[in-house]
Length: 463
Image: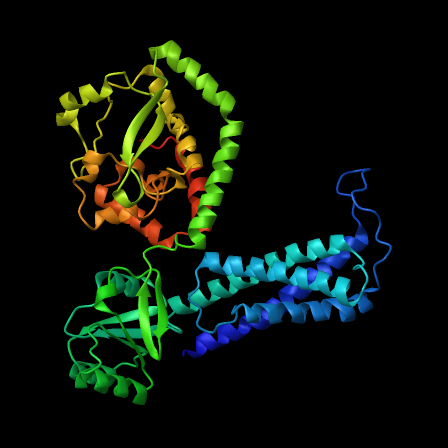
């Protein structure tokens, strides 16, 4: 392990402690002052039950600081070699802050048998703890990145084996500032020659064979030279996500899970879809009525167009609902317009200035209002708020086996591909983004995509 990794890992402990202490002292001063934020309006009653600052420091602030550090340690927030994403780091800080206030309240109610002298102070303290700890850790990350860019703490890595390293792994090693990739070596002899000139930190074997002498010799050499050893299983080269190391008796086993949308992940996503779609259907019902009236006035019946698309698992057809934005015989006219299709990179159909779109249809499509009836599809469980784009059966018949991986989850009203370029994306890139979403799903990712969708629609990006 690099000395800089140890240094920055240990540095998080005193910085967290200082951040918590600053948050607790600031909360005390704010409650003590009871400042009027609005002239002549007293938002809080004057603080009359607070102890002196000395008593507060020794009886609450100091133990509170130690408590948070202990909770953070139990949550593995002081790992010297952290590979967690920024979202996971933020989530851990929020969870640690929430656990902190729960433990404090439990202590005062269950052990001390009396209410803490200021509930407002506790709320302030919890907010400031999360904010200050997050700020201090962001500063540590920025400082560590500046050291890495200067070459301090960078890990020197080589890959070795008769098979070349997977392209995705190679691109990651070249892109990540924590690593300096020195290239691929064909055999052990090349490694010994290179290690005499460079201080290596990690050797990645691309074709390990536990029964081969070369693999055993390589592992022993790495042990004796204090070089890290790792291997990339070829069968998992293109599925780096959702790999879990488990044990089959005494033997380690790597298990691939296609998506975290299994078990509780699927339950949480469905509950989120039902709650949000139900709320939006109730709130937007007047808008639904207004759009229906405008469509009737503009081009008559029907109001809603039903497009049969492929649902989850590619084994069912679902009726995707849309406000009608085209003329009644749009499907019949499609055959005549195939020559103008600008999507020649895949099975999708798209033409510029489609003559089938009605006057009101241009407005509906411009703001994605034609998609609103799909909230009904979401509410009944045929679709999700976020997911891969639903496609026509005729289009799906042209999919390759790998592209059919997008049917592992329900199609969505919006998705990672839709906010990353909409219809301007090449079909292969759209499928890649959909698969990335399936493999990396989280509720935070869904919230981010929904938030990003709002800006994509209102920034007048082309459909």
